Image (cartoon, rainbow, N blue to C red; front, top):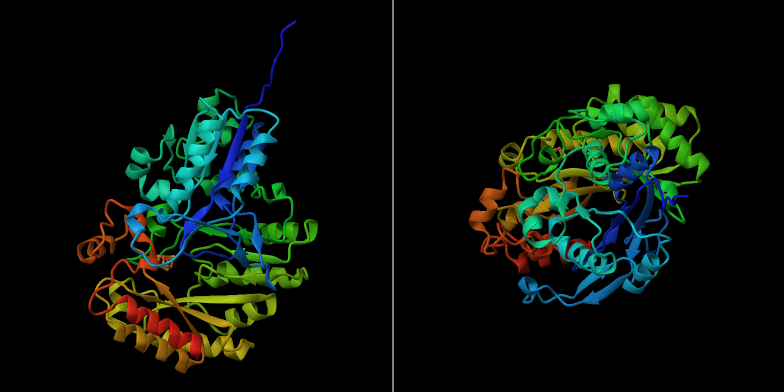
Length: 452
Ligand code: SF4
């Protein structure tokens, strides 16, 4: 008699800690990793998911909140920054306990990654897993791996750095590495698009693996038709595609009614583009089915598309957190950086949102500060402009992102070696500070907003 230990390979997937000067849980979930989890399960793999960020404290009304943080030593390149540096998420002992509870050693470990400058948390996790699970191949994917591929290959210590753009490619990679035959082999590339995969399988991300599910995120589209010079969306995602509006509503319905989820964050880069074909039918159907949820747009939505009907649907369907990607009121900068909106369109959108029922406090407007060569006066003007229209300005410090058109300009003017050290992409250090826009200027702007 022969003994088969197991047939289906066991894949351990992990979302690592954040390491930073600050971090806040705006409904953060590793959506790509959760989609891969679903694909693997559908194809017969056994999957264990560990989300190191699934440990928030001080939950607020809409389930956003602070992460548990553990103060850690600053990485050497950031030593001179006069702020505490922390690891956000579950305590290390808890992670080790989760590992010790695994019934079986994994056959493959897949680790995702977020912002480029969060790599110390990723590397620490890799170090721990390598020690515990000797000789188990580790694949590193996610945003850092895609944007800083060479850095990750050189320094991460993993076996494979995955910089594919589609989840189906990850499935194919794991299938090849484990020599495990897929149940749905016809779902695989050559060249199959994620959208095609989604339409065929209609799989939902594996949120059901969370022990307690209060909030989820959803992506109704992939990519963005704009090409803003500071944004990595065009590099990270091939083209622009959207899901069938009714299937999107089915998914919202599923999580809201089967799992009692009350808060859903839209992760789309371009939720509102051509609203008559997408956003409007989705939200009309949400209202028609009587789905009651709080919706949030932490990634910002396109201002130009907010006409009276869209504003009204945002309000009536339950969007509680509205964030608009305005960035600047300087018309030359607007055009230079991609032309996604102008001041007239912005005013009109704010009027429409107010008419629909939103208060000033509820309309959060992102203003990007510290762009290469930007003067503090430009940021002051943008703040004043947003206030005057009756919305709530929120400052976002510019982070230089590799493979974006603006990166080269940032590299030339930054006092930090942003080309070779991703830690210097951290927006908290104001990577493109200069005499015309200093850290002190930035502090004063922020204090001014807090005093309002
Ligand atoms: S519109 Fe938004 S998502 Fe699209 S490229 Fe510009 S910043 Fe990126």
